[in-house]
Length: 571
Image (tube, helix red, strand yellow):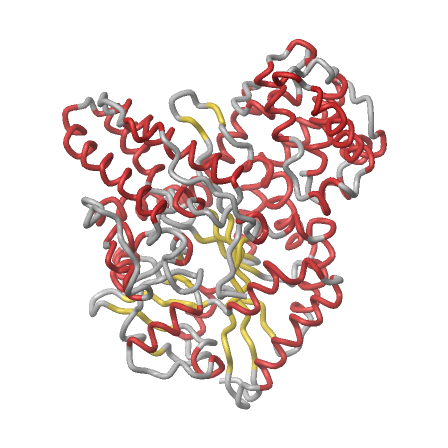
């Protein structure tokens, strides 16, 4: 045991995108997977490559990895099924359809204006030109937009989504940003080649850091479902006793559906990285005693969730949750009497500072504030004892709100952490190993688990409101039809139906339903969710219910960070 106090820091970045493909055509409906790949996934691995002393953990959702593999194959085969990416290298932009023109102008100004558009004068002027002519575009007539305008807009949109590491290291990106205007087809093709090589290199780069022991890689049930809700809608009541629930009492056969997501995630992760993952981040940190026990039954050694879940669980267990310094900074063992899983809990304040606050500060001030908070935890740690601090957050959506995609913040943060004499950057599996060898004391048992997520310690982001409950009822109805008809289909068709059902079970659709989210985002995800349900009915050769042609939610709010992230606790 150590003679002085020490902090073990688990810095855990969660990487996730839902399946943006229309499986009936193979076409991508939204471009967010490849855009985040060239900007965020590439930058995040770069920072660890640049600082070998730094250590962290990354969680990759399998359906995200599957799409990265799919994009890599598209580039190798020269057949692009993402319409926006294909337009980047379209030889004749003067003769594209009105629908393609609309896709360009509706997509290519969707960036955080302050950090991703206004810093680039040429890109800013393209927006100003569009704003001048938009009022006189009668019936969406795009004849004022020349082929060169479209080419330059497409190039600048993709340049804005290049990671800072690409801007600093890649000569093609540097040349195009310096040139600024009048991009040729050859230059657009060169940019596509940069995007292709970047995406194709991502999985090997992360795998290399994993094999060096610098990072730990974990997974999530395959299509990112809220496991406790698949198992039992009434688990919602643990943290939201008055919440209304869907009309359907349960999601039929939810236990087997949850098992399928867990098993397929473990297998796919092993296929790509050569190792069975030791840990899982349950989608949205959503846990219940039943869900954690199910993970343990499948050999999952550790999981993680939010601080609010721990506080609620301690109260449910008739234990004190008064002082987080006494209860938060340690993992707990959850057991069903036969299978155990170690559970780590997120420091909401520290995690949310990175996600929501530090983008507004100078990088050095932000890092100093973070280190000061860790030093305060260290000062409250009795001599000779250790605390385990878990900082867990979205690893992709925060950075567009930071200057330079968070480059200086992350660089300085890793340097400060790696060089601190009393802080050890570690991983969850390292903690388990230290407990096993006696370097750390054994974990306490958490007797009761109050079901909830990392967002407010509840499931309110996914269930309990009119729109979210309606989305669940649409899925439950489709699941009943699935169960009644699936066995009559040939094996290959059964597999296609099961895959389509699994996509519909993902958490993202329910996340976006709600008036607090922006209308454009709600509209996109609402349409895609209903399309996925429609595709399921078509694959089952069953009539499509009329209500799948009606929007579920309208949106209209102005959520923080465009609604892509939530805080662990109310600000």
